[in-house]
Image 1 (cartoon, rainbow, N blue to C red):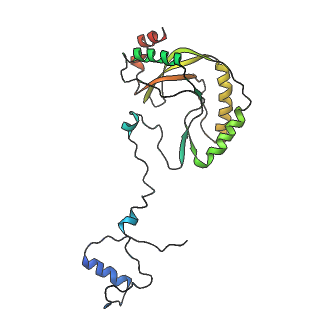
Image 2 (tube, rainbow, N blue to C red):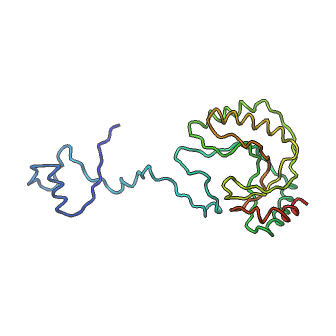
Image 3 (cartoon, rainbow, N blue to C red):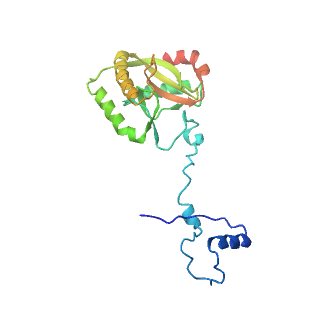
Length: 232
């Protein structure tokens, strides 16, 4: 379906309109109102049409207040999808009871700490996928980890973490047994990342389940007496 070109004009006075009219339809003096415009004449675009199509240069406006103060680690671009690979952890009642006890004590040092809404162990850094990569990326991951069997692991070491930008702090439980199994998984995930020219995981990863987080770098408040008490 073809469409005629639409052009919006800004009105700056009756004299300008008369001059513009003379340029697009010379010799049209004496035409009565209500007559159809000459073929090829461009008409002003109604405001309702102009506002239907926002500028493609405008991106979403980040408002950290809507995300408890969290800040993007990289800018949003249309068509890009922030992604990371992880193993989900389904929390049971005894785990949540432990979390409540730890969080209550940790908040005496850092009151702004909040509980995580879901729990997992990361197997990759956050990376950016183009939309058309998503399906082949997921399929490549499935192919790589299909041969892995279930295994057991233990997390019983409290540790304080920050993201690379030091804009968020986390209280986590570090994996103390089963570490080698996670390294094997990461090796396969890294191969997929390399296929898509994406960043691989950290060289010496500390596998952990994050329990709580806060905005900013709170290591000074939490490492030391607080960490020792949480471990106890």
